[in-house]
Length: 483
Ligand code: AMP
Image (tube, rainbow, N blue to C red; front, side, top):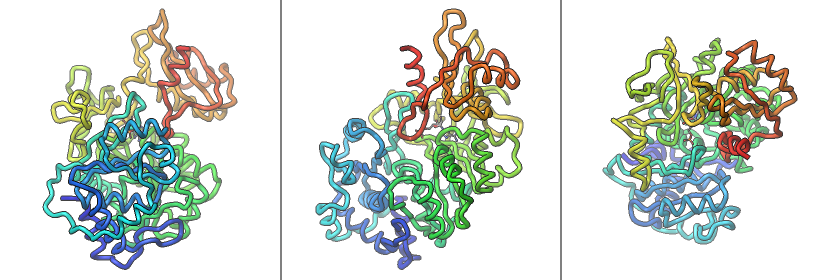
């Protein structure tokens, strides 16, 4: 199948209902959205053409995605927070022959058509194409450029089948929207929030794009008062920013899916205390979009810390395993590399057979994340294999030390890394943002975790280095130590 069918079906059923909204204002109905997509499709070029979209959250992203799919082209969404040079690298790597950019971003790019500019409007005057028929589900739909926390960004090739598997799993596990519901795009539509367009369009739920084109917590909460049955995907830092508003949960905010990076137990508890049981957790990666494991809403209710600190259990249609060093399944409680398989797993990396063969092995996606299953089947993520600290022959998982540091009231943020050491191989160093002193933190940790896991050194800083997705850059912390 082709994902355009998702829009086609909804336009058939709910043609006159509101589809795309900017803030409170309705922009297009489902019929109008379908018509615009089919007209733009007529101008995009041959099947397989890569169409890059570099824009803050804007309504045109929705029509461009469906236009690309109607033309059997491939979308290459680019995070709007990247540097123009990084954007150019992606455009170049993908071999994108058309680049749609918002006015602000177009200024920094060598080539790019301005979304909503005169040329774009001319596309809408074209004769619409017919919806695609009988297409191969293994065709590419999306080149997903990974956030590159562990190196240069690679393009995960996502097929129509991959995104349909993600869609079905989302609707089965996490959320059951209908035509009286809404998807609020708080996080970048180039990534998590955009990936959720197909499941919500399939059910006829409104696509709501904030007027600020970004995530402003107060605007986000206000919008929930204007749209029915709201759901959103938010990065953990965004959830924290919602809580920091001090506001209570709007009546219409039904579901917040968080994930894509660690949500610390203390932060999650605060969020649940402030907003109630509206949270769902996903663990996924560009290579298995939004869909490896998860914790449903009900799993959060009355859950112990082990459950809240876990990433849940396998999503519908996905097999998940933990492999030991010898490549065989690890025993319960033993830490190994997390692998998964299923229709959601990417076809490989774009133009990168070497990286593909390292990552897709024996039918499994090697996630590069370390974790272990407990007796109840909950998977706990430790760290990416590259972030594990090996000190005196013992593995220390930075996430565990960070969780405990964050329980201290004088710690706002913590990032733990290993520093080379002649005696121990590596020692643990904690970068801390907050008011606590090294002695206080040492005493705090001594009461809670094994001695050998304690940082040998604390570095107090104003802010942790993060990439444009809000993920802490461990690499940058290690570089600081090397200097
Ligand atoms: P990306 O492909 O850029 O989306 O990054 C995916 C990586 O983010 C995963 O391999 C994990 O290391 C991390 N990640 C994703 N979801 C979670 C989660 N729920 N908890 C902790 N880390 C996560």
